[in-house]
Image 1 (cartoon, one colour):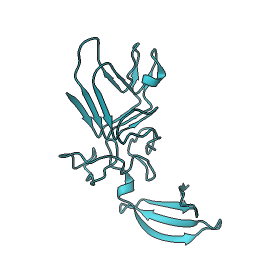
Image 2 (cartoon, one colour; image 1 turned 180 degrees about the vertical axis):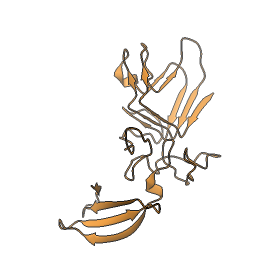
Image 3 (cartoon, helix red, strand yellow; image 1 turned 90 degrees about the vertical axis):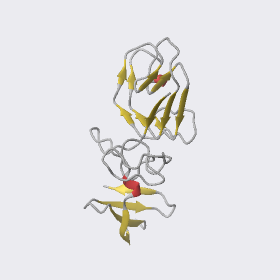
Image 4 (cartoon, one colour; image 1 turned 45 degrees about the vertical axis):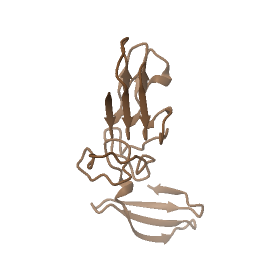
Length: 173
């Protein structure tokens, strides 16, 4: 039984007929069950197979839970939403990432790839999301009538949010 927990797979490519740009479980023999939990599988590619298998291809037992999989994947707590990486070279997630706090706690996993503490509702992927660390630092009415909220992560990083009366939040750039 193989397990991947709190990993981020992105930018990988497969050039075979069965897919699996990020994960491929099987090679014509009876392979092990593969378990994925709290992982992000996004923007992986496959050049010769069905594009729907770009992230995951499995011929054997597969359990995928509390993962963000581009194109979607059946399982408990899975999502199919842009993880909002910080940039194309930084796979830490942004403040409004749908992966922030969307994972499930895993016994024995107490820090992320950078050594940041994992809370009881961790983020999906290798990095703990900013969602769990930002605190409000102020609020005021904006010229459009929406509330503007300033958030601080305690490390000198600040973001300004516009919060509409409907409750929709957007980062103001």
